[in-house]
Length: 287
Image (tube, rainbow, N blue to C red; front, side, top):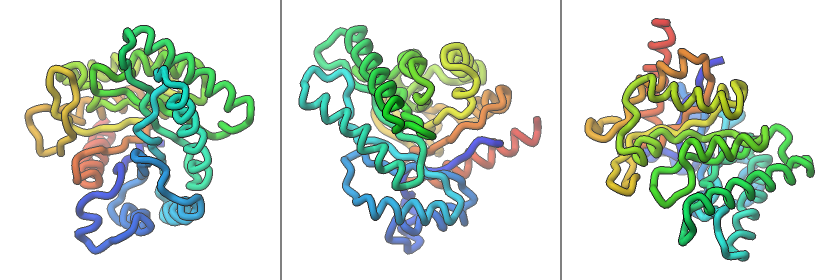
């Protein structure tokens, strides 16, 4: 088993090459020697289950594994009962779409602090996600499925890597999404060496075990940041903000991890995903 690589959404080049529909993405990615694809429902579930099934069949036909991103409106720290109810609904609907796609991973943003103190917002988020995962598991709805809270890039968002790992420690169907661009932005450029990544992975092994750490979900892109964290996603041609991929690849290889690595570069997702895969394979060969 090796790490798998692919884009979040369709690169600009996908359309420039004459493609018009994500139904064509599976074959396109196969021809680009990529492995996985993340479909984002960030603005809401604007798709029929039938279309999801067709997309899933096309990706499967071309050997591309799919993950889904839940709407950005998810907020497990919300004090508004109506909004909280919608948050639970976004996760439950996401599971229906996972099954339609034949996918197994639903990525979501945990929440934001709002007017709460951070510790209070975090505890609400943690407890609610844990309870939801336990309830869904008891209903038999999480067989073969992972719910994947994501590390976040802004200071008012819940989702440091420690917070995400504590959330995931509650249920074996919770799998961390390490967005290293977000982590780097939130910590003002702290990810520079292999040891910086090993620290995060070793903490993950400590809190949730080697098995889930080994198959963790990863988002990677270079991200511009300011005092409050993330500003915008960049491409690999950026030489100012980082982070760089090579130290992450070295850590993955040293620990024998096999993550799904989704590239979220701006417009160049597939190209930068392939650049990561190429560098990873080269480093793997040297080891």
